[in-house]
Image (cartoon, rainbow, N blue to C red; front, top):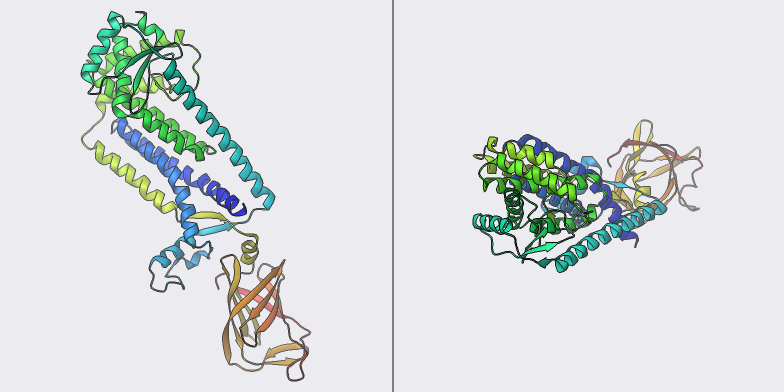
Amino acid sequence: MEAISKLVVSFLLNGAWQISVIATLGVFCDARLRHRMPSRYRHVLWVVCLGASVCVPLATLCLQAYAGGSIAPLTHATGPSAADPSGGNGGMLYRFHARSRAVWFPATLLAVLVWSYAVFLIFRATGFARSYLRTVQMRKRAYPRAMPAKLSQAWKECSGKFSVPPIPVLCSSEVGSSATLGHRRPVLILPERFFADEIDEQELITALAHELAHVRRGDFGLNLLCEAASLPLCFHPAALFIKARMTQTRELACDEIAASMLPSATHYARSLLRLAQTMFAAAPAAKASYALGLFDTGALEERIMNILKTGEKSGKWARARMLLAVSLVGVMSLAICGFSVRVADRTSADAQRFVGKWETQYKGRAFFTLNLKEENGRLGGNCVHVTRVAWVDGALIPGTEETSQEQITEALISGNKVELRIGDSDPILLEFTLTGDNTAEGKPIVGESPDGPPPPKKPWHFEKVSANP
């Protein structure tokens, strides 16, 4: 359970800044290219941003797990790792986790974050399920109805212009405007007003053309997939913004397709505006569903302005610009995977305080050096020390200039103190206590022996000379 909690909080921490970066990049690309490429390409850009927002935090977790969970200092990012001197795959992982940072959370705060996210996720997932079931029920309650002359003529005209399979046209009192739903077998659901000869024929053509554009693009299935995939991001306002822009550009793209089927874009814009006035005046209270309605986005002004400026957009390099924008989002998404935050174990958080190169000197020369490293949540490293010591005035001092290097085989942390076991055979035992951020005291643990020096009365004074052992 604790491991799952750490994964969830790491996902939230990384998603908090990574999704914001992706959304900002999407805004930049969209702002630079919105007047230079059709809205269908802008829609692709925002779909890619949403996909990156889902995949990047998950990929970061996978890379952290594959890297073994170790958190190395930033300066270790250069060069291959000690585990893989060849600089191969292990070196890549070493460089990755060298840019990760461990953050320790109290167990209570960790539990509060996880349970809050779980409750919020369940709430949003329940809303998603209800909307989907409401859509299915609306489809079941819709019924076929004989078309009046104007609607029949408008349907024939639009069907002839769109290369889509025959689509059932149904009537429902639950929709305020025309709506499309279904992926494999799409249906077009129209409000009762469309069958009562209360709508002008040109306005009917506008509404039907827009819905057939949804069918030709396969928007219903993509929208449902994006809604389901974005559920883990429901905590982030930037993810909601990306979804909103994706929905708006989808409607703009369908407007452009529908307008191209009519005599002029101005004609389509006027019909859309009149239709909106008619629908809003008598629309019933709409309930949330995943049917693609004509006026679901609430961005009518933007849609009208976009339709009127469609002819000004240059399509010659539109696809190249779209590929450039998508590539930029992709490259940046890969890059930010390497900069991450992860939840550290308590032992890892404690060990980080001791990490560094510590020296104690005698007459200006270092004779005992500790290179302490955090390795997979545990304290380790090596020690360079003189091979012989002497006892003078209650302190141990170097008895020779000859040095030896040995590995730290055991480290037991207790608050600001760690007991170190150095070497395997005839080990050195050292009680190392932090007295400040860059100072410490070390007391060799020496047993009573007639052949060896007596236990020291004065500790060694250590200084951290480098944060990187």
